[in-house]
Length: 269
Image (cartoon, rainbow, N blue to C red; front, side, top):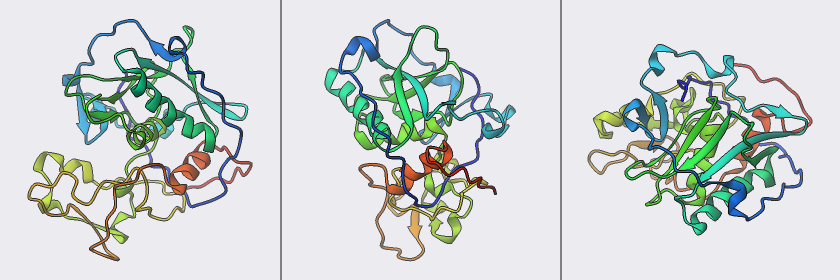
């Protein structure tokens, strides 16, 4: 696994989404399942910032991934992302993962395709005991893991969330403009998890802050004392972080980042 790179967070405002017809995903396990046993992922060589994975060498190679090609390549109208699903998942769990991928087919130009033997870059969904839910940010080259521990992570919203990381998106509450919308209550956050809330210099692409995004943390995530860790400035009682699926903004951001729509307007910092 190559080192992950810091990326600029691509967020955009609501617009018409790409309505291209979804590609069919055949429900045949030998087309999308990796049946060969794989070695366990070496979690000791990973640094997990919440559900974002980087390698231990990450901070020695902190180039923005936008300058290194962390987007998945587009060919014609579509962005084809090869994938494998580990055989350790049950058929029901595989179907949940497949439905998560299919949701991108229905609303964006992303197309997840079963990995062929000649394809080097691909995502591999796997489960490992105590592995949790996590993903890298953007395309990493070679085999790229998405961790969906069978106990607690195989849910539609979680699948979408981790896929969005793999496509190049970070959490909503780390946006460069987040201080206009939320207060991060660091005194209530577990000491070792405070890095998850660090603000990032991002390219927001004129999008509004979205409390309904599937990428938004919950109000009490990583609390050390039962008190809120994030508070909406407009309404301290507002609840968030419980999205069950991608919001309209989440979908539109994918379409804008990958130029799924006819408009080729360039958004800059």
